[in-house]
Image (spheres, rainbow, N blue to C red):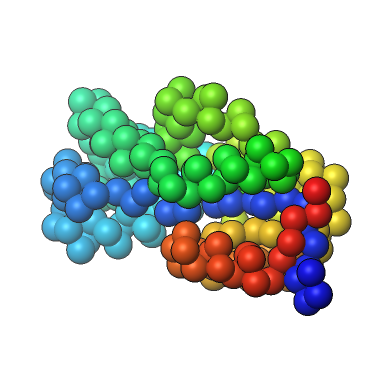
Length: 206
């Protein structure tokens, strides 16, 4: 165990870590529904997403993305396609986490998610979500990564010192925010790489 740091909890981002990425077809369908060319859609989607993650209602979000007011039917289809594109779990990753949970490792999710996607996630994967000890979502908290407040709430709910928590996210800015508060952090670059990094640097203090 020499050189390997003890940790009690593994906390994960949801999108692009626990979940698979949206397909090219889904992104193209969203662009089509907004009436935007693909590159313009991608830019607008990302530009307005932080406000959506913090609780902006879906009609306002999609109207901002499209640059105009949208009718109810188009809004409904945008919500359905967008939410559905984030519901596919990464099965090998989820199984790795389940094995850790069975071994007694504390696990959590900290995710920037809008309400529409969170509702679908909770309806579709309620049993799976219940296996995590702590789940924090930006739309419910009014704080989003990389705001330190979301990590402070995480530590409060875990009841653990920061140096006993490992946080994994696909965005370096979020990892940096966590490590600034004393958590261990790793940027997600695939399950094989993550497992190697964890095995080389940490051990589970169960």
